[in-house]
Image (cartoon, rainbow, N blue to C red; front, side, top):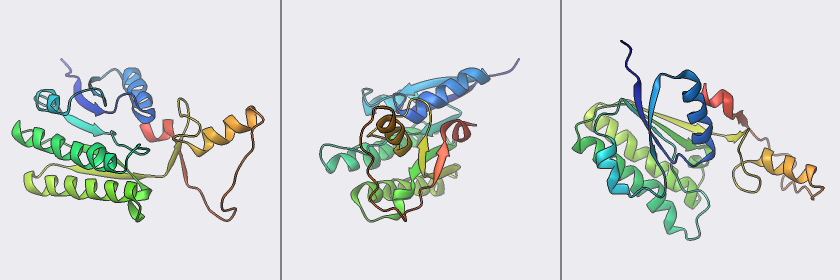
Length: 182
């Protein structure tokens, strides 16, 4: 009898998570536990009890206040790690960071700090942590003017809206969502 892999996905309302959930449904071998921004962080202590892995996609990238970068990225990850340690869950974590982690802006710093927390978690308990610094992800269900330059470009072209290019010499690295999920 095959056992389904039990995976917690954080930010199940997000663009990447929606696509990953669809991919997992197609595969059929996954039982997904959902965690969204509406779920109280303390619920993580119950949600991680018998997991096989975590796909940590949650994060704040366009907050109303800069302090939300810390609460939505760094503090949430601390709580996740505390919940796993508390429940003695030495399981893999896959984390979607960003190429912005290389930059000195509030979002980049929060992603970099989150990576540090996850590396320390891995070192402390011997769990595997996979950190992916994603470039610009595009594809189905992405939102224009929010999480995809490609969606914004396509939306503006199709709605006869102006296109703005800030640096015509800039190279944009892209990854298609289905390639990311497989």
